[in-house]
Image (cartoon, rainbow, N blue to C red; front, top):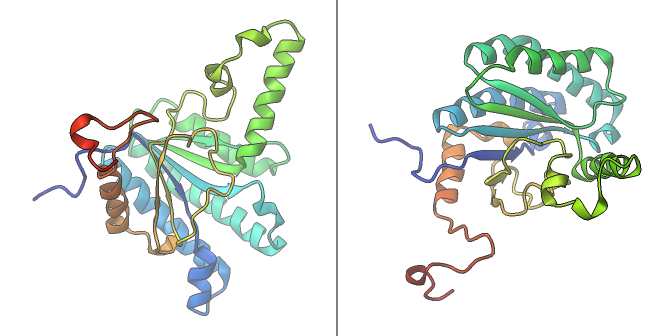
Length: 247
């Protein structure tokens, strides 16, 4: 049977999982039902990515701005995170998935922080796909924290300001050691980054899917991958002569 996976497979895919609330509202259900449906899609997305030989899958699970949502919804989301890790961590470990968490960990509830640490430590030696969970994450906050670290190093005399390069900055942001995303997918039809991976997505391809996250199934994932496979990535250079006609 012919594989659904395109020949040009991205090494790193990042997804803004948007539309859980709208999915629930359209069905007359509480927003929590949409978030629960979204958690089920996470499991399928990880499997699909692994089968497609994607090496890194980053999921925008909870932004630093999401704390501004109604208290009950935030509480429900924290409950779902606990549920996901407690239910799925063993399975992810069995499937050789390595879990990494990015985002600010200050002021996070102790039990949540402990679960995130457990997920990372338990899967640290795994060699399959890396599942990067962006939790309490905001790209601007990430940059501020990185700048503070670099400023402290300069202040202490451990770093010369003249030696600071892009590589220096990349080594101080949350994704240090993780390649930049090749493809950023956003569901729900919205076409913005919403403070997600602003530094890392400098040369990423973007695919905006009309479906809401709970409807983002295997077929939709492959549709996004196939769209990526049709892109001509030039990183600021010009196209090859045979491709440059009409450019």
